[in-house]
Length: 245
Image 1 (cartoon, rainbow, N blue to C red):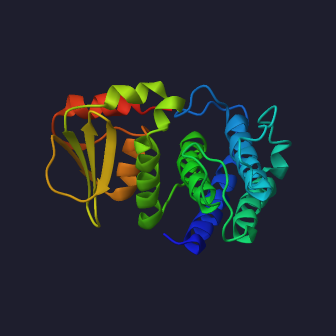
Image 2: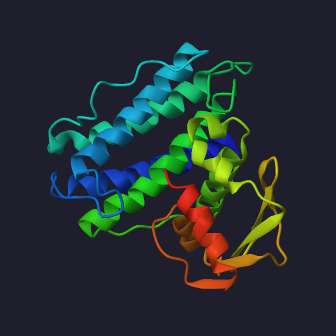
């Protein structure tokens, strides 16, 4: 997916997220993130966007300080504050030099990494906001597919186990999990002795999860249960348990 589509997707999803949180009770519990209230969810996205934009602007070689709190300010300012935050990310990435490299959990990376990372985070939290306030949630198939690819890529990074030691439990002996969307190419996850390998493809596996791509995105981010599973359900459950953030 090119940078222009990532930017367009971030605008779309941030706008939907902003509408959802602006119309809800700020103190409502987020059912898919029960440790958060709606105001925390709004603050998380707005501050994550701004933190990312500053990281890219500085071409930082190490993590920069995060905000002391996720306070989003008065609710009547949330919608504009959030859409502005997305523009900060987009502008920072688009204005970065072609050879720029920025810190990431996967090592020095082009700034585009962070545009994609913020899109993935925003899509999933847009769903969380919609689940909290009863507003609509929609995501284009190409964006949902990229959220899956980006998330699987992060889990397969050798350095990921430093941030999430539980990922070491996913090493295996070649067991395979196949993600099979109703349309388009799927994904094959292989558990190897050295770690996780994820590739685009299809076929059969030890367990196969099928469905619309947006639904599969929500299954593998633990927002909804899998409805169409064939094979070793315990293998899928083990994966989902050890990939929860």
